[in-house]
Length: 436
Image 1 (tube, rainbow, N blue to C red):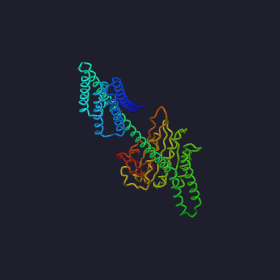
Image 2 (image 1 turned 120 degrees about the vertical axis):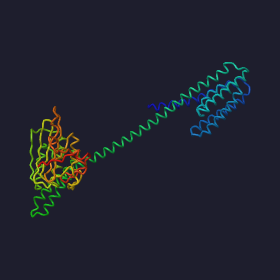
Image 3 (image 1 turned 60 degrees about the horizontal axis):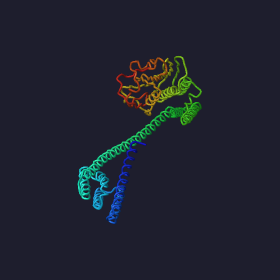
Image 4 (image 1 turned 30 degrees about the horizontal axis):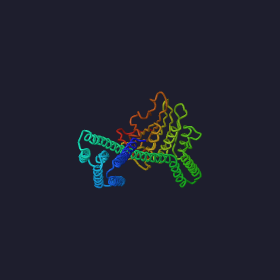
């Protein structure tokens, strides 16, 4: 049980104890008055009236009656007790329950004077019945009033703490709900971004290839080879879509290593009139699946940009295995662009190219570096560090060349051979240097 719940239980128990105390003192007084004889009928009727009126107050408290109604109820109850104490001194201790009610229903400035008045009435009635005012007659009601004041102070403190805890629990609950809603929204956005990147790097690229092949076939005398290649690309798009839905590895890596998959991607690029070459540097070895997928998708996206926008005659894809990293370089001799003046570059892309590459590499701890100069081509280097004692080689050597521009530093709307990349960050100071 929470602390707020325990505080509420304590307050409820205290209220019930007050009701039991009032009923017990009223019953004891009535019993002693009946045993003493005298005006039994009057005492009985007055006792019943006070009990009924107290029950009416309990019912009103459940309905959240107003302050005026509560004060009226307390005044009538005090008048009934005054009649009872005038009939029999046995009801004098009922003043203790009235002290508690007075301190709880009246504001602090009126509660203490009210307790003082009740104490004076109790002392005066005791003196009138006994015919003398001794220390017991005076100190009994006074000590009772002091105890009631202390109990009320504790009650109010418990109530304040309970309300504060309840408010804190409410705020924490609302904060947890807001946090959960935020996490759900972030998860949805992240999943949307992932799916957009996957579709852009797979299905969209294959469909783009199909469009280019069909355009070529439309103008060719013999459309057979182009249509066959288009059919092959369409089947690849369908296979990629199915595997994307099933959250499986890319079709190109099924039963193949990364070098084999890259070699196949380079071979597909040759169908579009580009002289494409694939080079492997270093000793090949197995790679974690996320790393292989990231490098493959980055290479495919870069080759798609070369086909669609770079107007390049030659493109070279290099896969380099280093002691603590693996790197893929895609260099073309196309139109290029100036990172310092992105507005001057053609922008016929979708806006997802470089952004998708950088995001994909970031998921596996990699980095993307772009070098380009208008009219002199573009070079893209994707480097992913691998678990090794020496990670110094995990940074792409291209990043150390003059004019190397990390993608994270490319401003919004930078175009890589016509592919718009919307990335945050300040504009680069040094222009990219072309690498054919």
